[in-house]
Length: 307
Image (tube, rainbow, N blue to C red; front, top):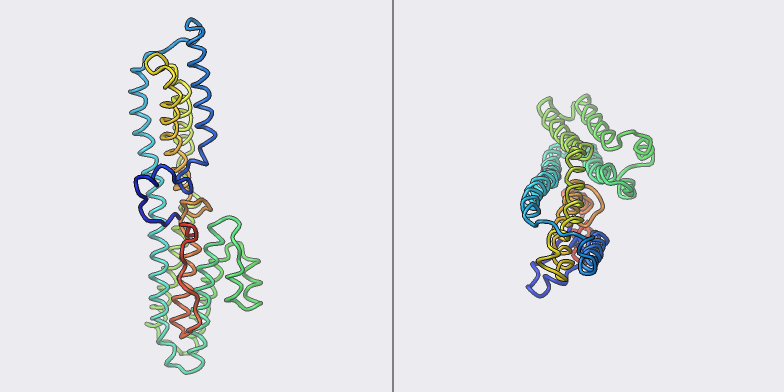
């Protein structure tokens, strides 16, 4: 995710990183060169390279802008919902750390049980990052699991869910050993269930993209509009047509590309959510709750990028 202060008016026109420009630059260049060729051909052979009425382009441009705006709103809703889910995960993890304080009343065994549960919670947050983000590294998960548990983790079809099952199994053993009461068990197990609900919500977002037909329609319409636009303005704008069409292409293709990035909030794009940094935040909070003092600083953006 891009984290930077609001740029000044001068900086506004020179910011490249995170501006989508590099991603859509090939399309803009193609539209510019095509417009240049159409203007040159119209100047040389106006009977062959015809101009079109610009009126329909204005109407189509308005309709396309509305549809692109609707799609981007839908993509942003996915992005924001994913951010709320991870905010909820942080909230539940912190609450779970407070709830497990009741285990420390059982002496050393209770303290060890609490630390085991919180280690599993930390491992879960990092495992969820690997589960949602392709190519994730599970080294951070391994740091909080013993060798046997990590072996089970690597063999599981759904590693984060395995860790939740292990947490529930630990709670069941504590109840069977009479270290926690029925009410305490229900309280702690409810928090594990809430963590599982967050995972299910994130999996729903990841596995359910926007309808392909709708996205395909917008892609086709945007490309056709930009390809035909020079024919509508070649008479009125002349040699200024390539610059105007390139600006229009930047707007439409930029909105389209930004929607693609927001549609996948757990990806590796610059505008994706910093779920790795959020998992690190959970780790720092829970390790502090366990009494550790040698903690790393909270995640900070590097070159205005927080991942």
